[in-house]
Length: 471
Image 1: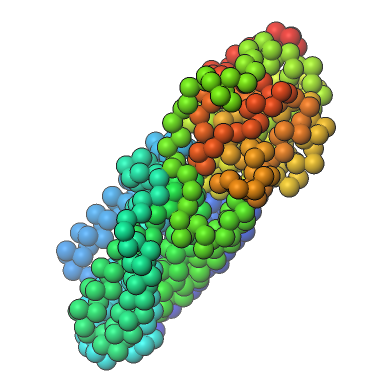
Image 2: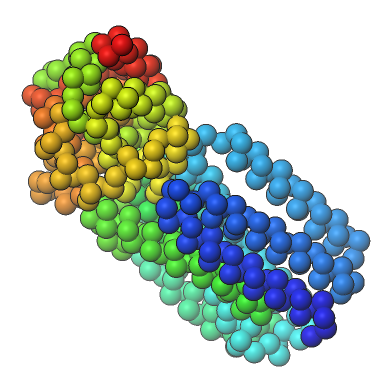
């Protein structure tokens, strides 16, 4: 190994160490931005070191340079556009697309390495085995992530899509992975084994995600994120590059832990989710009339403002409705007004609030909500009985008391104990269902007032009304 190659190797190791540090800093909202910046800078340095090594080796052709530069410019432009223009409500779809790109790129590395080898038949298991695993995991992640993004975007039905023989197919396809992997390891020069493994893995990604309902998509995205990391790690073994192995395993392990935490928060096993989820993800608004809807107690902005202004303790429960209305700044202003008036204000954030982990935390951070006011479910639940008002904004299934009863879609799912507050106010446009597709018993509770309005408009009205009472 010459001097330049040796230097680049150490740069890669340093970048990997920065990835570890960045991930550690993301454990807390106060340091998350710094962790993200360190990780991004480390990746930029690693890319620059790769270009330096390519220039030093002098083996790349003009066409290769054209592809390299074009890919870098297009990727940078798309990344910058996504960061600036994609709304928070569409962030889960974007993350899923990122998973697809990462998994697909990792799979292509293995395919290219096997195709470009001078003597493919002579490749040992050290290259062919991780190469086969890279192809399987990467291709499954690529197609599965595209389906997940499509479900969240509404391009693909959010309902579980099941066809005759689907369960049997989802058993046979993984079995074929074993056959294809062994075949490719024993015969690395077999194009039939190579392309067959790619095709089967792509098909399984589709058939695995289609039967899963929209309500479980956040868990699926976290799982596919773990897959992406595993695929990148396998690519690192193929290329014999330590930094890729470390970075990939970091993503894989953190994604796996996140998947387990989210599944626990929904009281569902990962296996149960993969076998087939619940909910459609297409929560169409229902009319506010008849049946249980006729028992609700509508309230006005002035009614709610009086309760908030004279409360000692208010717990705010943000949900997807807040994100959809982009009302985080209005909420932050209202909370600050109450805090300045001497009201004890805190936010109860359910682990699966919104459409992805941390969705609400990022949203509230945009509105400069103090981190000290954000409380996790286990910490805030004991405080609800002391709360004068629980203000729910667009959260549905995570506040539904029916989860404490057996025999329904969310039975056993840990929820926020909103119904134990002295008074409850729910800001919602209609009596529409959440992802689970069931009625929320909280809405018909005698102490619950339903403020039917768009979250952005409603919070603005509340801020003005509260200002009049406390001004």
